[in-house]
Image (cartoon, rainbow, N blue to C red; front, side, top):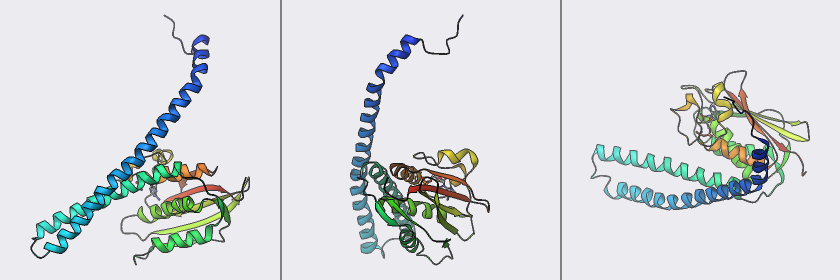
Length: 254
Ligand code: ADP
């Protein structure tokens, strides 16, 4: 009995001839999928807004008539609606990360980080975001870049160790190839080694994060945005414990 480990030359030639067809059909499927995500996002989003508004109204109009159990039930429903709303928002952001036109220009990383930090640190729980050294300007689409920074800072604040205060350190430096390498480090729960390469795939959540809320889409969106700018993104263990996410972006137009 013979075991064939390589495709026969004729089969290989046929596959090579069919490659443009296969690529075209993969592109079509991707476009279809993105269209579906956009449609699903919009179609799921509007009934959710209606449900949230009616739940609010119900509480306002009948709050004094409802018992403790009814209030608890309303809490559960409102939390579920908020969770669903976040998922829909993420699905739309996922589709937008691919579809929206890239409007790259000189962007002040320092201003963007300061704005996102101010928006993120609204509760007085002692969380800290510290910038080390000066942050250079980059050549990027400001709206898409804001999404990346917001996601990485948001995760660094969210995945803190139980009972600990979140501490996030941000720095950037010019890297080879006239790129800027940005690092966002935390002292949180860290990411198990086996999960590290997978956290940038859509819907992958690492084994130790089950008790934290999330959709598993944020980093997939970040990767898409960074790659559209010609950069790379990754994560490594933070020497002080926790995770250190990094990404690169061009410093100037290429
Ligand atoms: P989400 O946080 O909504 O689940 P993300 O795509 O942003 O989705 O992250 C994917 C997964 O990567 C998370 O579910 C979590 O398991 C892990 N992760 C991301 N950021 C961190 C972090 N700073 N510390 C520890 N784990 C993280």
